[in-house]
Amino acid sequence: MDALLIVDVQNDFCPGGALEVPGGDQVVPTINKLSQAFEHVVQTQDWHPEGHSSFASSHEGEEPFETIQMDYGQQVLWPDHCIQGSDGAEFHPELNTLPSQLIIRKGFRKDIDSYSAFYENDHQTPTGLKAYLQERGIDRLYVAGLATDFCVKWSVTDGLDEGFEVYVIEDAVRGIDVEGSLDAAWNEMNEKGAEVVESWDLL
Ligand code: VGL
Ligand code: ZN
Image (tube, rainbow, N blue to C red; front, side, top):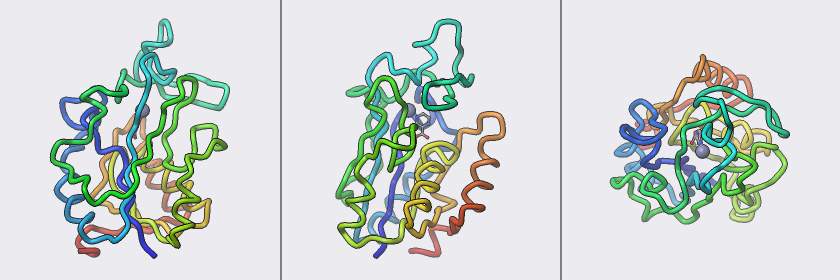
């Protein structure tokens, strides 16, 4: 069975937002069409407390888009974004969220970031999505949203590692691109066995 996974289509990742993804808002009309076409739809929402450890502002002397070492591995530092309850954390106002059956919030623990829809960035703390999908008989995931090189990529590679068949909907994702991260993400997703499709193949 198929499911559509819509990753982080939130104001802060759209033009004018705190961590804007170029063309981030362009995925909205496409995703709205896709979500009508799937029987199972799941969304994620980046949802950080103030002072989150992934924010450059929480680390003296560090600037956004620099990388530091955390207990759980390398971490890119971001501008403050998607703060719980803020407008920036809301879904894009034109995103149709009515078809979504589950919204997974992530990144809510102050000391650890969470890109993937499946695990926090330690790759060990689960969000519960795997069990949810398995219990509903879903074995194939179609992934759309933001950002290709971070939350989309980590969700895709974790989904593959957990045994799901994963399709990335190329025209329904957009990337940030920090020092080549976008090309690296496409390579990694391809090498791990993700399939790339276009929305018009599915509609
Ligand atoms: C994301 C950076 C920080 C994403 C979330 O949704 O890709 N990227 N938090
Ligand atoms: Zn975040």
